[in-house]
Image 1 (tube, rainbow, N blue to C red):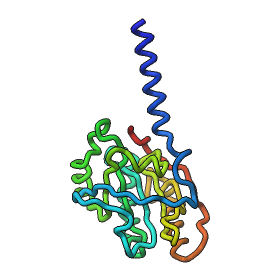
Image 2: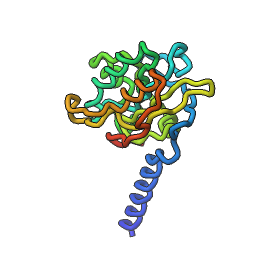
Image 3: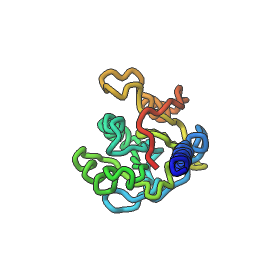
Image 4: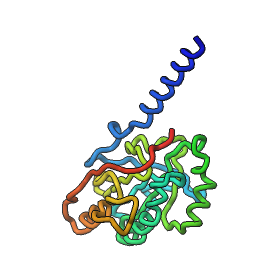
Length: 203
């Protein structure tokens, strides 16, 4: 009887976890408008998209310290900010994991990681995990490219950074760069959605 009760609890926990983590069906789609947020940065200040008055859009990246996929992309995320922040599309990184489950992703660890890697972009904590479900993010890293319009921040691209997480030198298609370049040139984005490759967000 005890084993049956334990099994029932385990099934319930797994089901709730799977349901909670499956937010892509309910999150933003291409053409939707992303609501603003106010999240704590590693410097202790609260950051919102509305703070960036001169920005033309944003490269919103859900990422973390502990996922090997996210770690593999850190230099490329920094390179995106170096290339596009001055052109109006800064990187805004958000750490979405439950830090009780993943203490290596807590604020202190975020500060240490950002310092050691020399991040030049905001690295925000999604405390209470309120923001990533709105977006529909399921992985780290998971990219949402937004463009400022009169109606708000329109979602223009969702998915992966490029087509090779293992080797930056072997990348053939740079999805995010191609998308931002298209927006800067006033052209249509050829590939608006790809599958994000990474670790599941921990709830």
